[in-house]
Image (cartoon, rainbow, N blue to C red; front, top):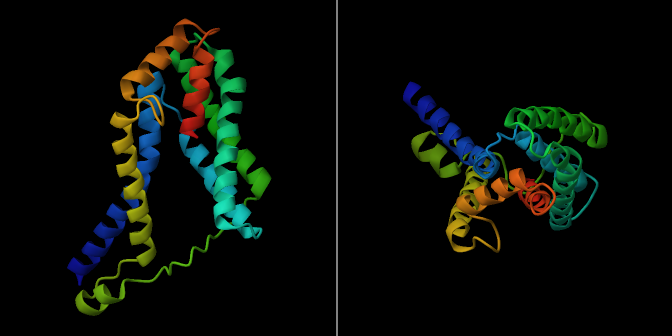
Length: 205
């Protein structure tokens, strides 16, 4: 019985870890590009998730809600670059780091102000029940929903890694390109730096 419980906990942790990998990649991408740890990355994910769920709760089609959420997050990235990052050009990295901490609190408060602080649920038509054949044959309970979410997250991670070396100038910059962008931003704030941060902020969102 203890072994079965251990397997269930281990599987649940691994499945959750695949989904958290997407958030972690966002942290790494921004840090490699700018040398600054973006403390607001989690809050950006929270804002996007709450926006998407709230729109679907209001009867929006799931694909329309997804498209609108993506557009909102791009606009949010633009606003962050204009209001928060651009005035801090050529400042010490610790200044940018502290700015992202403050930004995290602002985004969390704004999310709850716009969409409410009550719990939200998202119905995707995938039952959150154990896999029947696993339960019947091995008496191991692993959620169908967790398996599906981990599969989707894994596919997205794989696509990201596949695109990084192949499309450096189209979809997403490579690490070396991103570092060059960040270096340009720090040296020439009035020329290409703000535009670079605009692109990086939008992609991070």
